[in-house]
Image (cartoon, rainbow, N blue to C red):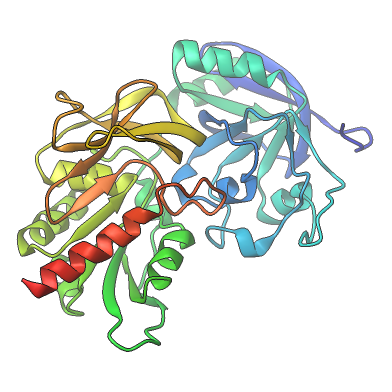
Length: 366
């Protein structure tokens, strides 16, 4: 399916000692990261530009990637979030009236290493059996030194690496009586701000380490906690936790998504833990514990909130596949592990933004 002539050989070395031989595309370099897989058949542009993948080598389980090219209007951020990218067959001749260039050109432009022509099904089976692990893509046959690099690799303070540095008014308040939303940026996808703006909100993007008093200066009607990379319980997130604990005390409605869901849970006394291989893709089923209705959702996370009483009244959603916590309702505030704003779909749970607005209006009325 690939029409590139004489591609260069590249290798993937895994933490467990296994080696895959494939071909290089995109930028050519040696790179180490945590290997994860995502099951989406489409949405590769949203995946590549999702800051939540910071420090990770992402593999697509769907074999042909890049067939509709690169469409900058569909990006979730200005940068590529993944550390490297693995696909079975990259498409070098995309066909789409919106496409501006190819996947290969995009990776080269941003200096992102690509690996193709390996047995991605076998790699997925290894990760599902053993759990996520570190790996290294290299242009030469891996040596003992490469495996030492793999074992030592850790993602350090990834939220700090992807969060904005200044307060940004990213969506204008053009309509009268627009609600002011403070969006805490842990690696926010642009789809979150777009979903809020579509509901008559002025969105103010705050860096992850902003203190509560500075957020409260804009007198927000609601507070949004974004997605983001890494371990929510990382010591590097201590300042974030202090801020959230103060914001929770104010009683202002808070809506958390993905990392925002996990951090809000920690601020409310819950714990988190790492999943064996996480949930990544656009086909994750979650059940509303109140109605029993099942929704198909887009997800990207490697940690979960510990839900010892999953299915109880506090847990608003659970994962149908493994029973893990997918949402918590605190009354005024709530959070979900999945992405109701996912622009590559599905959009079944977009109503949660409407629920957020209802709680903001009810809080104002009180």
